[in-house]
Length: 175
Image 1 (tube, helix red, strand yellow):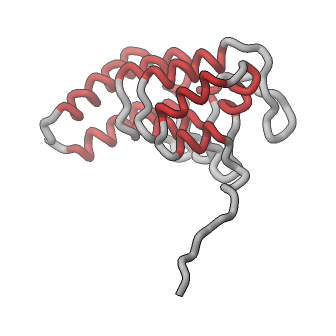
Image 2 (cartoon, rainbow, N blue to C red):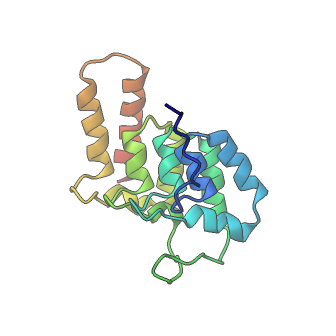
């Protein structure tokens, strides 16, 4: 019996930045973004896959991206006026951080269910403050997602719970 080796190319719905963030190669994602010209950075950042509409930002946040990568993504997506085209042929006119996936999840929602640092939350709130009042397709606000995480932790006494309480306090102060 021979070894099965899949030599097919990666699925076409993944661009390089998306794939790096998906594979949790966040330092490589940061370096890759720095090598791109402004127009290609936007194309890479605004890309949404055709399966669940995730962006590289959704993937980076799911993998606990640090604030330096999120800050670079924020700066790269807001400092240019030349927006790439959406799948429907129109141009992106919104913030990268206001793009939702197929569940209605904004990057801010994604951060609420991941182990995200408070500095990243501050950047996400700065980038899209209206996201604090936007619900998922299931009706949950970011504050609801944080509350659910705290409830699931129970009385666990550790730094993670303290961090979540600090983030929850920040979210409530901004609403």
